[in-house]
Amino acid sequence: MNTHSLRAALVAVVAATALLAPAVSAHAQTQTLRDGAGDTWEQKYDEETDSGSWEATGTQPDVDVVKQVVQHSKKAVTITTVYRELDLSSDFLYLMSQLRTNKASYFATVSRTADGAREVTLGTKGRPVRCRGLDLTISKQTDRLTVVVPRSCLKDPKTVQLRSVAYAATHDPADPENFESYHIYEDAIGKPGHGIGVWTKKLRVG
Ligand SMILES: [Ca+2]
Image (cartoon, rainbow, N blue to C red; front, side, top):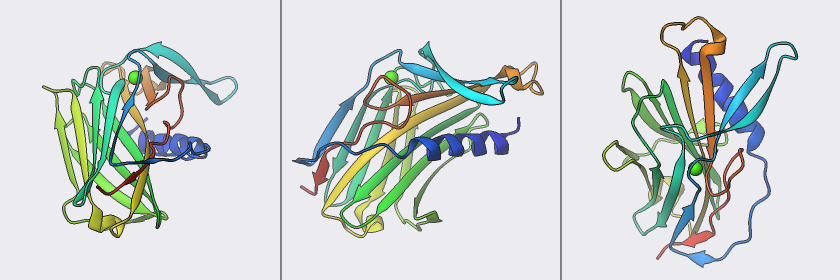
């Protein structure tokens, strides 16, 4: 399984899980979502039935989120995700946030590969959004991953609501051709189950 097909599989999983109902809304500028430690899930593939399923696996580095802080200021929406252990040992690290404003819906997507290549992108309606100032910081020391989305890239919305999911993938380096050696992990932020996380409240600009 190469990086391209792995990414395609992850995107398919995200698309399939991005259809959950929103939570009730209220007003705030900052919200902290708590997430349990040790609530990581692994996607299992059954060759006989050619189907996938999820199993609880405890905790895994680079995917087990314990907290996410979302702030909507006059300058930007800042998404700070805190992991139980962010050691960057995974082949592939992925964090997807859906931002729903009073005007449109966007996806901010972070990916990092084992060679250190990393990027953050912003998109809407399946198209990329050019966003000057879109920023990504990853810190092993503090186990934090921070994304900054300038408000101007979101057309200066009144409110922003957000939900996220984290993924990481690993494989046995001694057996890279064996599909069974690949593991795909997931953590839904703000709830114990798998799938995309819970919505924040509608965060008004301060
Ligand atoms: Ca967690």
